[in-house]
Length: 351
Image 1 (cartoon, helix red, strand yellow):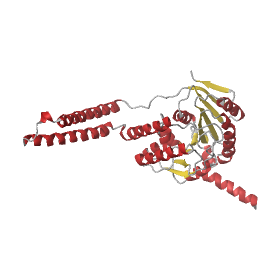
Image 2 (spheres, rainbow, N blue to C red; image 1 turned 120 degrees about the horizontal axis):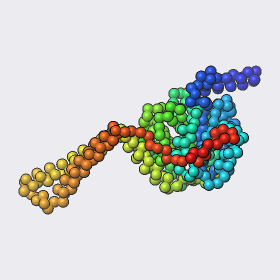
Image 3 (cartoon, helix red, strand yellow; image 1 turned 180 degrees about the vertical axis):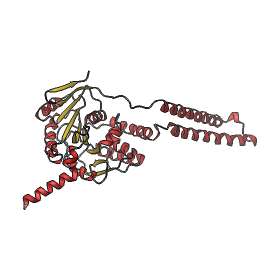
Image 4 (cartoon, helix red, strand yellow; image 1 turned 60 degrees about the horizontal axis):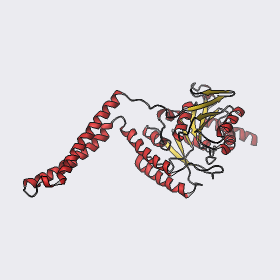
């Protein structure tokens, strides 16, 4: 009786995620049910236990149809040596090594480009994210969502990291209109269509849910387990915090106004011209009444300056519109790959 119950449970789980028939008919670009992208920097001690945890979970969840793309972001320790060993033990563990440290966004972009899964998951390599959460994320995605983000509801980080993170999440939610608690959680699950529709650069990995939302995809979040860091130290710093906010402004501008710069510069120009005109009109009325002399009022020069600035902003908007119409293309890659290891006993060198 127990055996039949177990079999029924397994069959139900398989049907809930994806049928065997649909996997056989999967388009060529979907070579796997799920691809995991793991960016890392100096995490040699964490890699083996992480790989073991991933393999244990994926062999059940994806029935062997999975791959992991470890992206070594220019580590200075023995991380890539460990990755190479893991690959030769199990070819599903694939490795990309950068020539130097380019940042998490570049590492994710490189992994996304090589991933061939129908679903694409991300998680950090520091063992604070639990691969078992992908089962819950897949179940949530079956409700019609395109992106499921983790929410570290109970965090095991120092207050020097949690307080800035809470402030950052509040400002991002307020600015973007996307109601999530934890934008920067490392563990997320995407449908392939989401990854194909967004571009990752700078510190944009923090804003992938924002970019996806503005592209029309349905996003949500679920609470996930967050473990204490066992090895190494956090890479979080004040500089990254500041760069994150600068990139938030970039996200807002490029997403809303990239193809219509006149809407942005034209609005600023209109406000500047109106304020300048109102000030000048008020001064002109007083001059007509004989109460002031315009030559003695610095405010008159300020009003004219506002009008000139407004005209210049209009001009910038028009030039921007012309540039957008002339050419619009993705920016070049901002990373340089030293080595790829995708098949046993074989590596690719990017010259």
